[in-house]
Image (cartoon, rainbow, N blue to C red; front, side):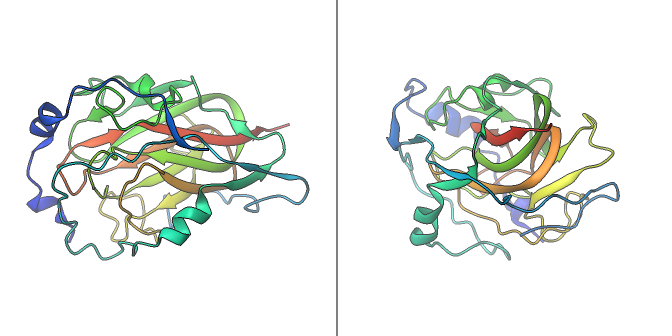
Length: 251
């Protein structure tokens, strides 16, 4: 059983307590799963041929206040600064770029509590107030329409990282079906006990930081990318700051 039952609804208080800083633009520095029956297999994680390095512009670290102890989370990964450092620059096939920037975002929550959905693809991963969208409690998702079918190689996801928090049941899926009922490929799933009903996942839960979470797209093909979450260790809300999808067009 996860910690959701003991979570206190503090989101509004947190939002009110956050210093009213503007959404910044200054960078700091230059597993796998089971899933729904309609799931398909992805291509090899990286193709043979020319690969290039990508080093995104990461936002500044912003941990403030008193961290909420994550508690006993069965699949929480241990802190490993060297592993984080190794992920700051990653490889993609030559020609791959962040195809999510500026693309349309939809959600399971039509009326976000704070912010707007377009913040998820505005290219700004800053953790300041005004940079994130807050969705209602429970199992919620945001979905990016890439506008065409792409082959995803690396995905970089930021939830709220101004405070220490672990988001539950993080599940990232790719499909050509906007309803995600057919031909769905899951590329990340840390719902180890199938709380959300999308299948058990073997990926680890993790503490959010300014470096986001790098997720291997495994060459999955699709026009739509959906990100699920189910509250976090600080409150029951779901927050999204930014998502990058480094991909190449499907020819």
